[in-house]
Image (tube, rainbow, N blue to C red; front, side, top):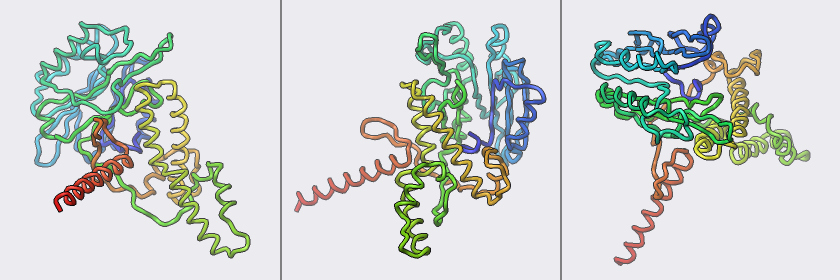
Length: 381
């Protein structure tokens, strides 16, 4: 997740790890600064990571939240709280009084995000037997008192899901991001995405302050180590190589065919990974039975991606099974970010996010537009 989205601030809640083992994990995640609120056994715990270039300071730590302040040059400070609301009854109600503007003397822009273990209404649940109207009312009262607005989301509606004993999936929107009006005005393009659940029954919340995404440039032919994982590679080589022709001609022909095969059959690793993540997000809305198969496919793609990064690092002594270490990620070229259109709604009201589908949608729109314009001109003539 860190490699794919490169967050500047990362909050992890209920890590189920504590003590020295937690410290070892935290030091390996690649951030310059971090702070932990210790878990009690396997319950609770909050970890927050950030880079020192953001000028972030810790205002307060509490068993159910970590309150941070960010300060940019010549701008008013903003506040951000990472929340994990306890499941213990005598603790959970204290959060609403402890996490407030008045309690900490906070003014200006601030946002809170995390696992609130509560919903604002029963419509945010599915087969959720522990729904409590009183608990929901307390949550809504706190939101209104603090002047928060829901930042909305894209992706699966439920951020937590679990299979029940009867075979039905139960779930709820337990995780969310809230902000006040000042924060929304300061970051008008900020958006929230519920990422597909992978190796957890909770979805990550990806909060972007802008709509920028990365882009890869075109390069010359390179043999990809990840190709060796495909059984089709030998067939392509066998059908392309000509024994009656010289080595140079065979190499040229092989590079052309392998590039075509990679594009049309095997496909871009990044593109395939994004497709699988999109399918995971969609399948979690309806067909839960396919989730295990797609997760296995995603793990296989991650292994292929690992081989690609390993090859690009030019360091053969690194053990290939050490997945996506910071060393050979740092040795590879980091793609540049650019602004782009993230979503479009088609004529059926369906939001389109996949890049290839976005290109087809825009192309078809202008083809139809110019075709209609040409017909009107002929009628006028």
